[in-house]
Image (cartoon, rainbow, N blue to C red; front, side, top):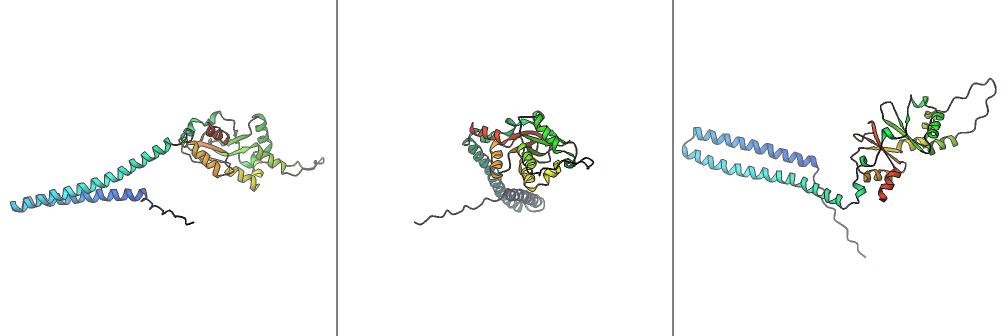
Length: 255
């Protein structure tokens, strides 16, 4: 059975190309009008009456042509933008309501979230203090780690912490007089390549105006991503203002 291959459509010109064309048409159109108008005025002053009349007719014809040309380009430029905006609006109407819902409407405000405020570098943060934070905030099993600027550096899950603790060999009891065994730190957890990957890809940042659909796309595409941190501009280094978990996205998508 012969298969009919679809012929790919020609890609539309990129926006910067359309912008450039529109600007050049307007610029040179205005220059042409100014030049021809100047010539018409000069001819009227210096030439005979008959020559001035001919120049006036030429000016009238050219100005009409240039105006029509510029108007057509402007109409195409803005008409295309309006058409694309209308298509997007119609596309949004055909989507389930949850997909177009802004994250600002479902996020947990960061000032109300259970979190761990970092005091120092990873090498100064003990695993014991992280474990204590989970016990204090039970039954929560994930905690954003927030620095002094309010930026979320990691979202630590209790399961990740337990994997680190389970992978450590049991230490023999220290004999009397032996040097104390140094405490495990968050830096040691980050040194574990597999666990560090979970923490690196475990969350992504979006802006309050991004949609639940965008959050779900990220979580579906990146297996480790289970949390979305909301910042004002959607950048990772921005101050966190909200938090959306994979559980919240799943719940909303079923509504």
